[in-house]
Amino acid sequence: MSETVAVVLAAGKGTRMKSATPKVLHRIAGRTMIEWAVDAVLEAGATRAVVVVGHAREEVEAVVSARYGDRVAFALQDDPRGTGHAVRCAVEASEARLGAFDGPVLITMGDCPCVRPETLRALLEATGERPFGMMSSRLDDPRGYGRLIRNDAGDVVAIREDKDCSATEAAVRDVNPGLYVVRGDFLRKALAELRDDNAQGELYLTDLAATAAEADRVVDVPGDLGELLGVNDREQLATVTAVLRERITRALARGGVGIVDPATTYVEVDCEVAPDARLEPGVHLRGRCRVAAGAHVDVGCVLENVEVEAGAYLKPYTVATESRIGPEAKVGPFAHLRPGSELGPKVKVGNFCETKKTRIGEGSSIGHLAYVGDGEIGAGVNVGAGVIFCNYDGYRKHVTTLEDGSFIGSDSQLVAPVTVGAGAYVASGSTITRDVPPDGLAVARAKQANKEGYASRLRARLKPKD
Image (tube, rainbow, N blue to C red; front, side, top):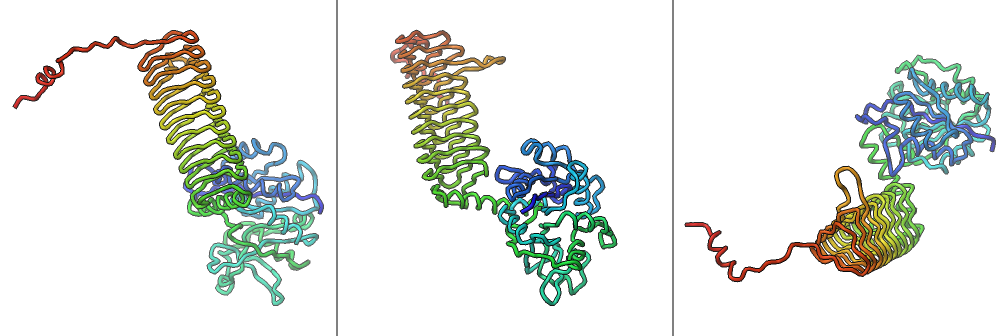
């Protein structure tokens, strides 16, 4: 097949979204709508792509350029006059940059994120050398879609936009989802002949179907409208989100991932989950998570940009961001790993613990209700319940270092910067402000005083008077 150019239409304002975010920049399963659309055309074989921008062009261009660089160019439609005008802008911009092009031009919509690359490849192959090919679908309620007008042989001879339909045409159930392949030489000539004498006063790209039918047969490839859905409002956004989320979880399950309940498991598209990992109901994997074989992510865990190594177990409702969980580590339940947390092999982080920017060595244990932030923790260290790393002095963060084999008793506070040496003990309830030498014992708490028989006198004094 000859070189293919793709045009992605993304100039619309999307007022029905009722959002300050441009429509095509709404995120679905980890990518914006426009990224889903551009990914599809490039994976389908397009060698260059042009995105037509208009509303919020700077924001759209910034997102697309950050991901694709020079693989994608832009065309500005600053005076929206319909889809035909948008494609004309794209052709003019592409030819000004790279010269005339007579091969296939794949035209898609930036708000149709569910379209698969395989579907686009099938349309390209079916169209072949013919001037015009399109996807088609059939709906019980076709309102809002352009209708396909066919001749007695069943061939498409025109596309009638919804607002231009006669009563007879409005009853047609065959609809136009808005995906096309047009030969470049035909496209260039036909765009120049478009007229705006229609109900909306616009240049309709769909008018090319009638022009192509006069010269040759229009190719139409039946497609699943569930894949061809567009997004115009938040309800439709939720619908396509469900489609893409189910597609991701089904692919993972077929690949050997143990997904207990796909309906309640949310995995974004750039996450990697190895065969024989297990995801329980309510798990959310966001960003670029990587879950290794044998790892178990239990109910309600929310992970973003987290590596979970083989055999690790994240107990229910663990939340982690930009962290690494080592082999056979155990975390939670209800633990919070903030950015920069690095857990080595067989580390244990208990319930209601919080870690931040801390490396924890092999076999170390962080007891429940502890906070360790800006720390360096060696191997075989025990951090008791309620321990706090006091890492912030109001201006700067400071590091707490616990060397191999040290033991920090419950309810202690370590005021950074401070180091507890290898094998040293910190007595429970201590507030440590100075370094503790290796193999030393630090006790830093008020001396206990017992007053015998005082409790009854205290109760008598505090008892309310009648």
